[in-house]
Length: 267
Image 1 (cartoon, helix red, strand yellow):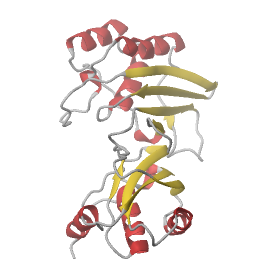
Image 2: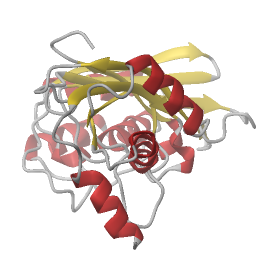
Image 3: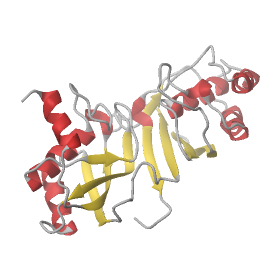
Image 4: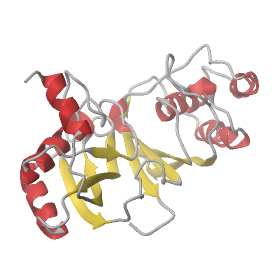
């Protein structure tokens, strides 16, 4: 069976006598082309689908709480699946999945849920962290962004650029070109930088939803402002007019983590 045909069958065929389960997991995205299944590239969704389908000896559909791009990590991620009700306990499933999955993916918990619960549509907020370090660290090449520009960003300007975003509701300037977004509206609830140490700074952002490539473009903008390459007034004008910045910078994916997903019910 061709790869694309095989993956399509895994996505769309599943048993009608089933119970919905939420999977709470985390993954290092270095070896994957993002979460969402693709015909010719390894993805987290594909690996999970193949593992759970092997356990049940039938195709099982798995739906994620959202997409992450190539190389992006997830400290907390939720996916749901509909599986036969009596074949395996949740503890049994967790044990088997962790034994089958690569070391870059861990399953923290599996919970039986109401049949209408949905990991993507029911999520009320999502949070990201972008980790930036100064200086070489051979053990974190794929899990942080090493700042390699000339000079160090101005901290006050960095914070001002991050805080400016909280005054807006539409974010076209920070959406990847050719994205399929129907709206650029996002309810941004947090946008700030934190100094973890003199050698490590983190950007934190929280919203009800995010546009394609949004966080990496925001981080690049704040750094450009802090380095004097873009004026804060230019950013405000782009947001007011909902037009793209002339000097847009999407920072590398290696430093980006999906850190938290919240739901209106216990998971």
